[in-house]
Length: 287
Figure 1: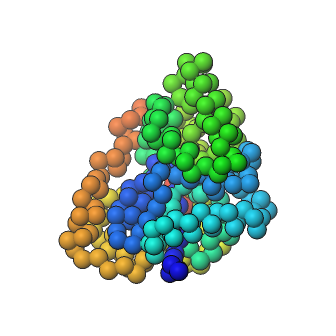
Figure 2: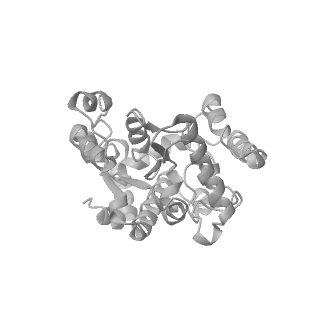
Figure 3: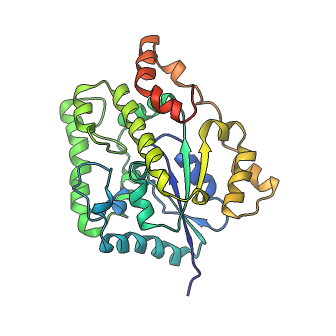
């Protein structure tokens, strides 16, 4: 019989550094994850037709909880790892829901300047089709939901081809009102509102978690001093890492994307971006 494990769940908006954190952590002995980017269809099990990723607690049933926990337990049995690491960016819209499934989990919450998130997210909205990436994600779709997600993904790509738009109909976490925003707003503003919705939901819902379950990461601080930040994170996890190992784990961390919004947008665009994001940026300590 395998030993107990701890779910380690990374919470953050898309393009906020969640991939960076997951890759570093899962390169530590004893930390394991799925071999695909995200498992949103698993988290949405029983709720695949819910219009957004903002799943309320009343949508969680004992059967759904059992299924999702079972996927984590299966991976733990396969790997034997004491930490099962997961990062699905849409979870930033439903932290309460996730916590109700895994009340014993450790949560790493990463925040990044939303103005830098926007240009990075805009690239993903217009990204080309990658077959291997898609197939990896489809492997972990619940079997009964497979047709739904194949159809949903295919129609998203087909619509892009037919309309000859340079962006998809949807990408990333689905916040309430995103469909209307995609139809009526410039992509820059959609991406801004997407980041804002994720950040605001996390700010509100983290209040229901115990503070000793949460480890906060500021993206800019992490990339500027990754050695110290990883040492701090290892303390939270109760994992001992020597200086040489830390150096190896953070060797690819870079500051090059910090402040990217200043290089990507015009003065008018930057003013509009700030108008949208300022309230949330201030809550997170950005001035």
